[in-house]
Length: 216
Image (cartoon, rainbow, N blue to C red; front, side, top):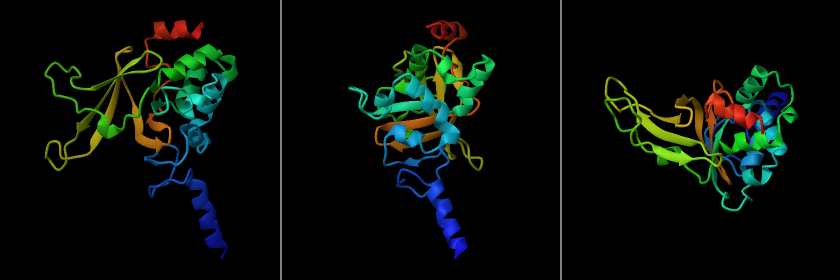
């Protein structure tokens, strides 16, 4: 009996927000959540607690609750705790409250797009001999960053384009590829495409631009 209770307890911890799909919610997982994006972030402190503190410090709760006019549905390219803490460690910042409210607001808005865009709605990249990114879906974030989202098919069993379809993200501002972890985390107020742990907060823009924002 105690093993049954333990199993039930474990399942209750690993699932949250009444997910509609049959998966384990680690915070970085595909699936649907019957709650706002802000509530979803509360379900995984390992991945999102630093982001939550930044959101509160910047007074952006309404944005992630879908109560900001014009932003009822958003796409959020989500930086996890690892990305935020690496930024803080590099600058010897010990508390998020030591960063200005204006900085936190601006840096978060750099990751917000004004409508819900799912992975399958992103264009496929068109092959180009010059290596340029052609045919991508262009998005301008609420923080003024121009992002290119695109999909590519992989090879499988020696057959071209027969494998998995992968989503990629490129920042035109920083002229760099942005590493992704898990796309299509759906909530009632938008979709989260979580960024890879290797991403460092602020990498969406050049260092000179980031330094200007840090002074705000």
